[in-house]
Length: 48
Image 1: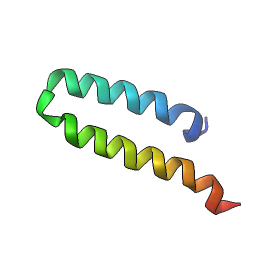
Image 2: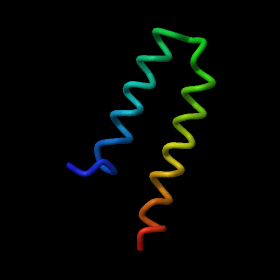
Image 3: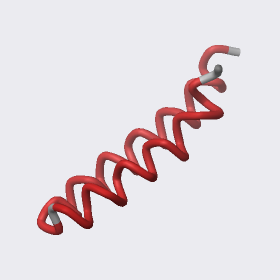
């Protein structure tokens, strides 16, 4: 399966669970999430 189809929902689910378990990680998880999805959105544009 393609990462661009499975990746975002899976990462969102894992991030949500991590925030529930370790609330102090919220800032880091949000920052990582935004950076990762920015890269996921740009990769197809760069590869074309």
